[in-house]
Length: 404
Image (cartoon, rainbow, N blue to C red):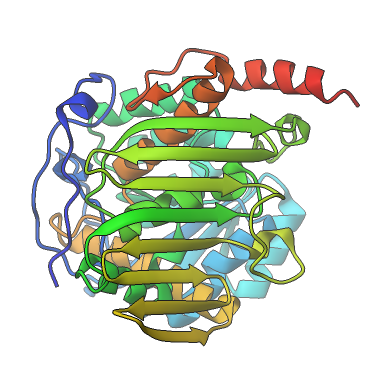
């Protein structure tokens, strides 16, 4: 099928520091996505794409930076379902962690210096599993080392300053291809539902309701990406939001800083409205863990689609279908497909990854708009040019309202 391509508006193109410089329509075999032409590097990436002594173009050498936590394991476990590449190296500042991870997954090369790993191993794709405060550092190092592609864990940024710095760096069109790891986009069940909605099964989209049990930094960007996956033609124009709770704004090594709760109304240029909820007040549709409650419902002229981590339902012209699935089983396949889509992009510049950097920059700009709307107590136009210090301002105000 042909992907639906995101078309930028003039207002989005007006921010010179960002990537929003135009639009295109490019055929791609990927699922519904927003893939502006400026996601493509303007200079060709080096075509290593093979192990030493091998002539197989599709035998991709891959590596992981940062081996702590479930996401690093998820990236590695997905290679059981990947045919075109294999892990050749891992790195972590903790020598014990990297040794244990490498032993468990049978990865031969293990480093405590990721720059040395990039130089010596020459990977084609690197999975970046670091805190968001070092995103740009890793991007720059990868570009300098000639790494063709990165798959980066979310969130892309923390505050307006680092979002702006990444946008300015990306506007210089480095050769490295970057996608942000929203593997839910590729989970088999959600992928099918996305295709049905984009193909018009429920008629024109009118309203989107999306929520997650954790805060904007942990799961809110998943929710925003889901809106774009089901409604890729939508361009956000305004946001009106409220936030509360300062516990999630406390500085921690993971740097997933965000208010505890969020409620936002996002208006799109085509008249669609989305409601976003993040935090413990969001609907409970999962199991015991706070991380099991991601969901999205899309309402159209003829019916609706509802996906959550453990099930789905779809009603068209009064006929309801529904079912269940196991999220872990779906997720490992989604992660594998996420990685395979990057291989596709390496082989064909036209097969732009649906989760490319530009789309993630736009989604995180909505997050920054949510913060500004909450602080200003007013509707904020998008795209939003962030003022410095949004997170410190939220921490000061929300912390004063909720003293410990």
